[in-house]
Length: 133
Image 1 (spheres, rainbow, N blue to C red):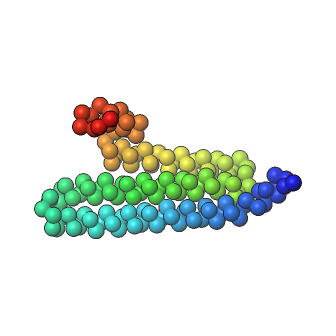
Image 2 (cartoon, one colour; image 1 turned 90 degrees about the vertical axis):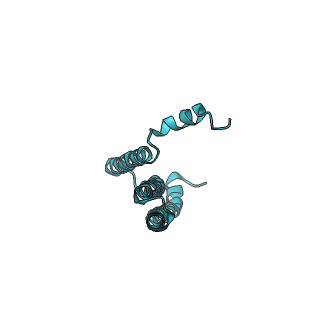
């Protein structure tokens, strides 16, 4: 029978590897999202005929979506990291602050991209006559 400390010792390296993987994925998503959004912005601005102003609005939305997805992965990494780290009041407070900041950034980006609060999205879709049930 495994004790709690034995289980923690076994899960620690696995959780640490998962945390590092999620952090790497989050950073990769943000970088790739920025590169793809920038390439599309330049393509749209130069060749599509929609104009630089419309291309810029699309660019901001695409860039925000990439950052938002990357932030979600980074928050997941922080949560996974709580399994690997020794828990004391200072580490819990630091994690709470990091998650709070990243969550605030996620909400801000969501509002910037969609123009409304995240919890208003389903109501707007239901009230739209063009949306099938």
